[in-house]
Each structure stands twice: as C-alpha cells, then as structure tokens.
Image 1 (tube, rainbow, N blue to C red):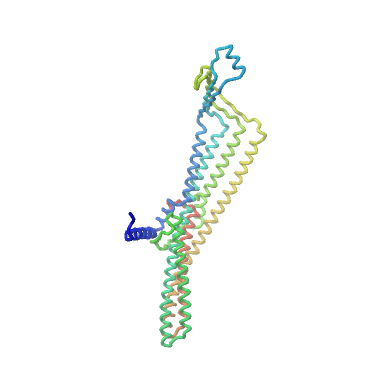
Image 2: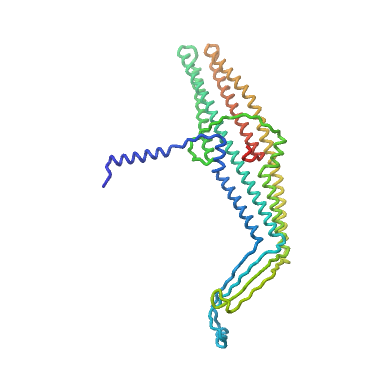
Length: 435
C-alpha cells in the first residue's frame, strides 16, 4: 500500500525539521578554569603522553620480573624407524614405534654482574621521565588553552571597539549629510566620512572573523565540536606579579618538568651503560631440571632423571663487541648531558623573555590608560567644534581614529600582560594545580 502524497510530505517535513534542529550548533558558556579542565580531559596530545607513561610503567614491571624464577617445558614427539631399530626389535622386547620426550627446567638468577639491577634502575628513571613529560605536556596544553581563551577575549573586545568606531562614524556621517543639505559643509566632507566609515566596517568584519576563528581554535584544544558557540564569561584582569626575575629563574631551574626529564634521561643512560658493562662478568643461575620420555605423552617408562645445580655463563672473549657497546653508551651519556645543559639554558632564556614581556606589557597598560582618557577628551572637543562650525571634518575623523587606536592599544596591552603571565607560568614549570 503506497503512502499518500499528504503523508509523504509530512514525513519529509519532519525529517527536514529534525535535520535542521540537529544541525544547530551547541552554545556553551565557559570560564578559563572550565576550559582548562576540558582540555586536560580531552586533548589528544595528553592522551598520547599518558600512553607513553603506561608503556614506561610496564617496562619497569618487565625488568623487575627478570629477577625471579622462570619455568620452561620442552617436548618432542618422534616416530622411530630405521634398520638399527628393526634389528633391535628382533633381538629385544622393544615393541613401540613412537617416543615422547619431556624436559622441565626451573631457573633462578643468582648473579648477573649487576645487569638486572641496572635494567631496573634504568626503567625506574624511564618511568620518572615519562611522568615528567606528561606533566610538561599538560602544562603546555594549559598554556595553549589559556592563550586561545585570551584570544577570544582580545577579539571580543576588538569587535566591540570596532563596532563602536562604526557607530561613531555612522553618527558623524549623518551629521555631515545634514550639514551638507543645508549648505554648511562641502560635499568632500561627506565623501571623506563615507570612506572612513567603509574602512571601519571592513576592520569590524576582520575582527569578527578573527573572533570566530579564535573560538574554533579553542574548541579544537578542549575537545568540543568545531561549530560549538563558546560564550566566554570573563574579562581581562590585571594583577601585579609578586616575584622578581631571579626568583623566577631559580624556581624554573629546580622545577620545570622538561629540565628534570633531561636530568633523568642522563641517569637512565648511565644505568644502561652499567647494564652493558655486566656483559663482561659471569652470569650464574640456580637450575633444577627433570627429563623423562616414554612410548606415550608424559610417560616415563623409557627414561627418567633429574638434576639440580648451578649454571654459569661467562663471555670471555667476544671480539670487543662489549667494549664497543660501552663506548657507544658513554657517547650517549655525553650527548644527553649536552642536551641537559642546553635545556637549562633554554629554560633560563624562556623565563627571562616571558618576564621582560610581562614588565613591558605592564608599563604599556599604565601608558594606554592615560592615552585612552586623552583620546576620548580630544574626540569630544573635535566633535563639539565641528558641530559648532569652528572645527573641520578632518579633525573629527583624525580624533576618532586615534581614539579607536588608543582603545585597541589598551586591550592589546591587557592581552599581552595576561598572555605573558601565562607564558611565565609555563616557563617556570608551575604545576597544574598551582596556577
């Protein structure tokens, strides 16, 4: 039975309606702390670092288990034949055609020349490095999220400033057109005002586009769908930094996770070198074994014996392979020590640059506050003079442009200060729960 046209139309309308509803982007309101929590829970880079840490944990578990006993079983099933076997069957009571061999071996390491101990130490340092790298990744993601959040604040304020400029210029254009209609001003004034307004509208469009892109960037970092509409419910804050440069550098050198990870990389290489050196020493194991065979599986009617004792292996001469491996490991230690020194130098450089940027932005905040107040006063004077016929259109537009620039510089200084503070926190290696 076919559907009626009316029913079919209703179903199509329902499907289209549900598609439209489902296509509407989600709207969420977030503050900075909530954004950081989402990033720490959803970011792919952190997820990968966590798996690296899990890998290091199981490497340590594997190395620890090499110090315990191992039990092995070797078995073989064979069909017996040949002239000698046929001759033996004629002269004896041998009546089987199959032989099953079994060997059980229990081994326990007594002395490995320090190999197992060194391997465990290296794995422990590897796990510590993985923990530090995970913390460093989290701090980096927090910094990126903070910067992305501040980008939204910055472009939101810039959109507001650009919109205000458009409103001001629209009002001024209306006044110029009124004056033109009564013959008070020249047509050139109106044309200049229109050009200025068009430029302001273009700047507003660009600012709105930057604002939308900044939201998309934040969504990508915190794991939200790209089309999610994020409403940020905070404003830029200015809080004077309490620590001096030397204190920041000292803290960073002691606590930054990538610096500590570089130290543990050197320790891990040293432990690996000790493990390599153990190849020159004997390896001693306690061994218990049992061997039996018979004409059926697990049968010992043919032969059965056991043995218990020590197994010693000593690689007396290996054509200097071990020496080459030792020199290779020592070169790795020297390279990692150089990496450590470079990392510490980079840490100090990062801290100094972030701190200097912070101080410069702080000075700019104080300067731009005065500049905005002066630009607002200058614009009001220019507007009043123009309305009274004693000022020019150029003076008004110039004052308006300087006012927009002053307000933009103020918001930029606030943005730079807050971003520099976040950059300094990252450069110092402040733990996630401390900043």
